[in-house]
Image (cartoon, rainbow, N blue to C red; front, side, top):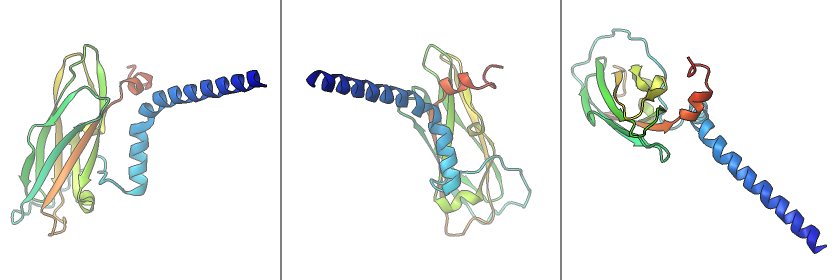
Amino acid sequence: MAEQEQTSIKKTVIKLVATVVVMLFFVPLVMVPLYDVLCEQLGINGKTGGRYEVVDAGIDTSRTITVQFIATINDQMPWQFRPSVTELKVHPGAINSTVFYAKNPRDYRMVAQAIPSLSPGRATEYFHKTECFCFNQQPLAAGAEADMPLQFIVDRDLPADIKTITLSYTIFDVTEMAKQSPVASR
């Protein structure tokens, strides 16, 4: 009976270890897409929308909004990543541009994906990106650097009590996921 018990325990331990190994491989591959879907469906975390088509509604020069930029690097991501400026003063309705700097310090090609978050959450429907590095995965060769563009408009209809908007990007390593994508093999 003791031998059967030990065999059963060994089988259980092997199954648990295999489950943990599979989870460690699986979670990073689905984390970014799952986060996107979750935020979109629940409307949480100040998730910004996709590409915005510019409609000239005029510039409101009577108001100035402070837009702050924050860059965060996921624990598994070795890149350097930062905004070129940490703050811009903008007028609602004006097209604004800035860049984020990225560097791949590794000795191999990597692919990143940036996930945006906006605060306060009420401002998300009034913050429109017309061009953003977050729209696509960003490949960088070994040791390569890049200035990644961001172009945006703060809507004229932004509530008057919102004076500051904070746009934060977290960058993730999606190299393995990109290798499996048919687009990456082109």
